[in-house]
Amino acid sequence: MQRLILIIFILFIQNFFVSEAWAIKIGLQDGVSSTIIAASDGAALINNENGKTYGQIASMKPYKLRVSDGNISIQTGDKYYDLQTKSLLVVPDSGFVSVKRKWYRGSFVVIVKGNELVIINDVDLESYIKGVVPSEMPSRWNDEALKAQAIAARSYALANRGKRGSRGYDLKDTPEDQAYGGASAETAKTNRVVEDTLGIVLTYNQHIIPAYYHASSGGETTNSGGVWGGADMPFLRSVPSFDSQMSKNGHGVGMSQNGANNLASKGYNAYQILTYFYNNISFGRLRPEWNF
Image (cartoon, rainbow, N blue to C red; front, side):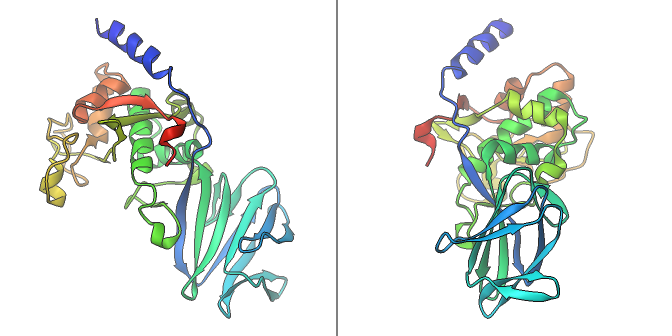
């Protein structure tokens, strides 16, 4: 019977139109005096205020950016050149862009805030999730737990898009939002898991939910109101977390990652894991009208 229900569910979600054009902006550095960028195959530097292209940066060569007189300057040789802009695009010809000794898909937006730099990764949603899953959950874990992680992370990201809008991006790249290691964190296994769950999100009353998760609960998850105050979110109810062998690690709300892996080891699939940890939720694939 459970197999039949799963087949019907899979047929249902495949009827939705999947949009791969969703994008998200991730803050990689915020409030730094300077940074070093690079591109694996070269990249165009574009003034984001007027669209002017300055030229190309060479492949596999580091370039230092800093703030000078309120604008972004780039170091070439032993000199800095004022780019006469407070917003710079770094768009790769192909391949990846780099900052913080990591490689990223998509492009960079570099902006001046105060007298400091903010470096933002403008990337499509699915590439972002490929950098989140192995950063949030060990890639050696059970495939079904990793699939549950991908769906939860995708839902969390979309429900919180715009959260850091005052800083020019949607989410941080740290566990304060979601850990994100870019292309440098990707593995073949976790990329396949993300592709297997392409566009699938968790919804409650036809809204994508912020699917909170944490490392372990120590035996039982926590109602959201018990952590953040206010009324409990109806889709986040306390349940046994299947991780009683571990001490609590994290806020305890939503899916226990260790509990998810333990359930997967017992034969639960990703959808059963998610419906266990999130109360009265539904599944759907992204549709154009959800692209808010």
